[in-house]
Image 1 (cartoon, rainbow, N blue to C red):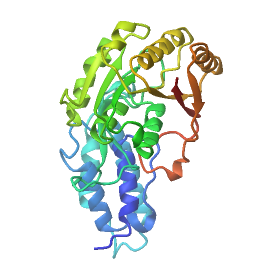
Image 2: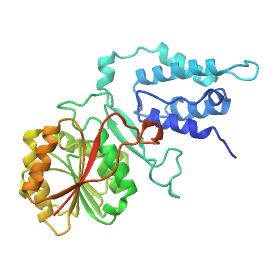
Image 3: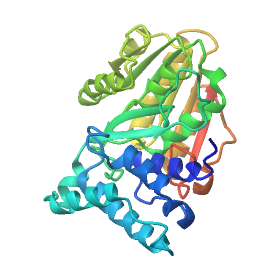
Image 4: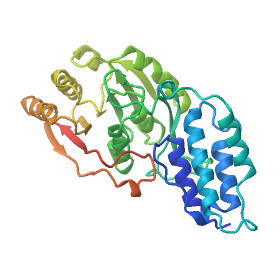
Length: 334
């Protein structure tokens, strides 16, 4: 059965499940359709459909806006109406006490990242496959102490690049530095057919939370992926997991940490021949980035920027991230 409206509903649902602050609501001619409304309700607002899902404030705000848009889209109330299910769900949300904004911003919940650049395999039965589900506090802003609490743009962008160039990791042993929520590592283990992934981070707390992320994505088998603490600049730690590919996203953020980061990359490259590294960096401080490039050159590490600009928001199918930031991906080798 052809349902030309489903693409708009899918896009809206993918954005909602990633808890995007700005949603692309379906056009009026779709919103007034009872089948489209029922699909949205069943996927997003039915009771217990999203365990551990969006905070109530986000749910209430989105559903209130959705109902208002549906009402505005209806030009013939004899032919169309607002779904009773949606109205009931809205009444329940608005009638329940909502936590303060400050509390809601800190709340950890399941965020579902739709990986649109991956083909749908025969084993993918859910409408939103392929997805990566993580426990995050997505409303946090980038700041010290937020490592591992949300997935940053550089990780999502690196993941998209790897989806289009999966030969980088297929059949290889991968080491991710500064894994954070584990998005890139889980992508490699779950969908990109790498031989093994070590998701490393310097924080005990972050490493401890990675096990929950592995479990959510059904990649908890240690023969496929493990989480390990790794302090940059500790050569002995790197030698425990000889890698063929080193990955890092948003790891160039502190000028003081640059020498240790480059040392760690170099030691990984010395562990076996032909090791490459791919580092995704959000442009924040040019001095820090220049220091990283200089440190690589001093250690005889060749480096080039790959041509992979951030796609405009209108062209993104998931995961969704800001097109107002500059993200550079670098390939390193010796």
